[in-house]
Image (cartoon, rainbow, N blue to C red; front, side, top):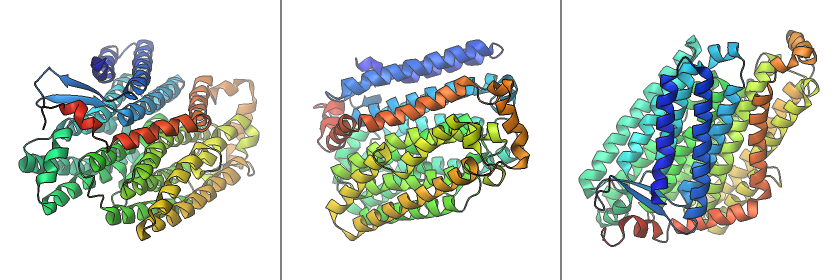
Length: 508
């Protein structure tokens, strides 16, 4: 069963090669892409079941331990891989549902499908990577793909936004190489399991320097304040499927890396004050930016930044209860944020814009579109009994149980951020869905009611979005067993099972 760990990455890489060669056969490209990502989802589901009994390890190339490249799947990695694959599949189906004119303009098939599969391969490899250098390679693979996806269509806004995105991530990649080189120079290894043993023998000051370097890299990837200014500038310009997969996955890879390194490499150095302040600032600055926006995409980009702060909340406290809350929140947020960006694409299709100044009456035009927005919007705001409420409640309980001033600051900020998120979502609902239809959108509204209305809301695009809404509701309905799984995952991060699985007796 250990060989299954290579399958998600290999499937995507093989699918990317096939779709690249089939550049002039769009139907074949779509079929290969959907099949590959669906297969990755199936393998990830199997890994979730298998890893509940303990981590799985694959030494690539059968090098002796602890040399060589190692892939590791524990509960945390398997859960993140499954949610990421399901969201990727929904986004892929959504993009397939676009009409031919929109495909040529927004997501050219010959470019989109192989690049999308490379992105999924990079994300999958990042979750399974068992050493820092392989994690670096994963970041570079997904970032290379994201550069292409972000600038597809070649418009001025996309090139400008892509330039900022490229510069920021080149800096973070260079910093990551510095962190890896420094870590190797200090310890003689980049294997995560070995590092967890060797870092403890270093002077505390050296450990802190290495920890800060790694956290800075991952904070840029995750868009943690003050390293988050690039995200609201870059994401809104991209096509809806691209923005959705970026919002859902890319920042969560950074969050995953923070959780993995903090719990495995620096369990006794949580840097609670530093991360706590960053979490408070990320939540507040992000949500205040969202409230000030008049465009749905930019508002959602700022809420994305803001809600990364909830995950930093759990990482900062570092207790098993707080880490469990952060993991549950990350899995929930991947689904919700991707759903809302897909809905924004549908809103733009019907209303001709995502500016609240140009929208109105969409709930009357399409009650289904209103429902597709309202359910994930309330989930994002944490309205009970939805999964967003469960995730926030877990984090608040962990903060109250901690009892320190940093924890109470995070608790208070989390409550305020949740209320302001509700205000932002209500603002979108009142102006875009519940308001008066502007004259500029009368033609689109009339077109929706006409026989050719299928042109405006294709069934596959609506079905993919509805699938993500239902997936988020599964998080709500199955919150009990799912949170129990997440709780076991959080406790396993500290019990040494990862080290035992990777190193056995050789590492010590």
